[in-house]
Structures are given as structure tokens and as C-alpha cells.
Length: 318
Length: 128
View 1 (cartoon, one colour):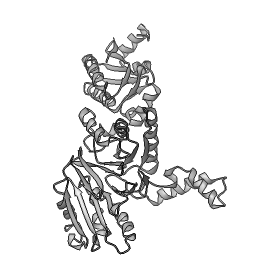
View 2: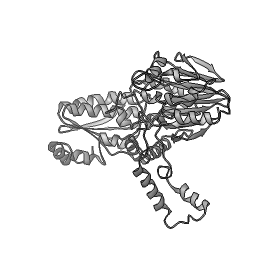
View 3: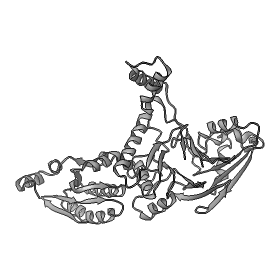
View 4: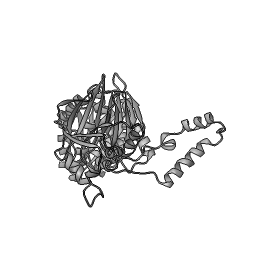
């Protein structure tokens, strides 16, 4: 595997910047440029580089969709949130008339993880193959129901590509287009599943919509084994620990603190915070990232755990 | 886990020492349970002097949250006092500083306890 690309990183519900949000960013950027030269492009780039990500960029608002760049011709995708739409457009732009194959792995079937399918352009193109993998019994019916009347104007008959559904058995490792894929049951309303992808000596774990009951030692041990020695773990860090185990207990999500602890115990090299709380603005996610890096620093053992926060358009090289 | 304790009027003051991590959280919880019961029996408060704690994990924080809930359910209060700087950062990052009552010193916690506790604490002197 070569890289991981994020097309949707927001939890529960897509969000968008408002005009006021953009104006706030512009104001902060212009304020930072006061007294500095912006006459040349390098000068301008230097000012931009000095700004925090929450000012110069945005974490984005699409719901869960992550691409694994395996190095092979087939596409690997985790979840079909609203980020599947821009991914589908980008993949189609690279098509050059050739048929394409997409392997899509579903953590679960909640709305924010399936809403991209009706807008997935490659599914409309004859010759393409879209293989949707998951562990839920309702894998196919949930996706068909999403496009039934009155929820959507067109059903599956509109798709020109060949759609296939493959039920996976949790804990079993499958060889799919050169990638070893293993799923694991996670704690979430209606169940969710994490995926461990292994290829060419690299390991990526996708573990979203997953709550971690702190009182159960065997639960933590199970995840430490699943995350073991991974190059990258994409982790549901939607809430603070205090919220996750008090007012939002049993809501099915986790925290940055638990992410750092599990990854440190598992010898993971890179933790990527994912499934951001939709009410958080860019500054709030920036703050969570800074705090998480500080937590990693003050609890570091022998090896350093790299910490990042996913944003739409982000790419992590493996 | 050994926790030095003393009773001051209707308040229990307890001073755990060491790390509260995934291994020691269960012994910490076991040691804390009778202290919560003692404070509840007095309808008083439990003050945890954390000056000797140099690390606390998520599992340890959960133990504190449960203790605070038990105290609240019985009209008592839990105070966590005198955090070391690293532990104070963990409280802030986890947002536990927003759901628990944290004080800079044990004296500050005692000042929030009952008048009887405050009077007895002052007459006995601050040292245990």
C-alpha cells in the first residue's frame, strides 16, 4: 500500500462552511499579513504557511469515505459517506475509457456512511464493477432501501455498473486484489466493524464508529491485537473522554485519549483522528489535534506515535 | 493500592500514590470503594489528594467519574486536589476538569467542605 486519501472525515452529518466562516478566516489571514510583504508569490506562500490550518484551510464537511492507494489497478474504499461523491468524480476523470473496479468496505449501514452511493458516478457507468463488502446481514437491503421511494427518485435499476455484495465473516482474513483484509466487530448501535488491511508490508486499520468500554480489559486487549504494529490507524475520536463516558455514553463513539492509549499499547506508528464532531469548527479540531499531540508527548514510551487529524483531501503516504 | 486516609469531621481525605494506569486502575477502584462508602455514611465529602499521582489513564479517570456519581447520588461531593502538572494536563485534555471538582490544593478543597470539616481541619493543622 502506498497511501491513504481522505474524501470524507466528518462524523454523523455532513457540514459546510458558511459565508461568515469564510469571512472569519479571511479576516484572520489578512490580520496575520499586516506589516509583511505579500508582493511576490513566495512572500504570499510564506504568510500562508505561517497560518494555522484552521485559518488557511478547513477540515471539510463530507461524511466518512477513505481511499486506500494499494498500488494495484483496483480502487479500495472504506465507507460510502458523502465523500464518495467527490471520490467518484475524481476516479471517473482518470478513467480514460477503461472499465474500473471498486472494492468498498462498509463499517456499518448508518445513514452518514451510505449516503454517497446514489451520487457515485462510477456506479452509473456500464462496464464498471462495484463490489460492496460488509458483515451486516442487511448490507444489500439497507442500500436498496435508501433509494426506494419516497426517499430517492431512482432505485438500483439506474446503475449501469455491475454491483455485487459480499458478506464477510468477522475475524477471517480474505485476500482481495492483493490485499489481506480482516474485519472485527466493534461496539456501536446495530454493530459496526473495523477493517485491517495488509499489503506489501504495510498495515492500515480503519476503525470508526467504535465505542470502547473502559472497564473491560479484554475489550482493550482485542483492539490492541487488531491494531498491532499498524503503520496507520484511522480512529473515531469524535468526543472528549469525559463526554464519551458520561453524557454520551452508549452513543457508539470514542475519544482522542483512548485512541492514543490503544495505539501506544499496540505499537502503532501513526494515529489519525477521524469522524470529527459536526458541531466542531476548524479551530476546535485544531485544538483537539494539538492537545492529542501533547498527550502523546507526555505519555510517550520508547517510540513516538505520530498524530494527525484527518481532513477532506488529506493524503498520508505509507 | 495503598491509600493513606484520615477522617476530618464528615470528610474523608485520601492520598493515593503512584500511577493509575490500565493495570492499577482496578486496585485503585477497590481501594476507593470503602472510602466512598465512609464519606457517604457521614453524608460528607471525599477529598482526593492527588499530589502523589504522576499519571492517570482513561480507565483511572472512569473510576473517578463513578466515585463522583456515587457521591452525588448520596448528597456528597468528591474533590480532586493538588494535581501534578502532567495529570492536570490529562484532566484538561480529557475534559475531566469540567465534570469533576478540581482544586489547586487540599486546603482549597477543604474550604468547600462542611463548616465542621473546615473548623476541625484548621484546629488540627494542615499536616496529616
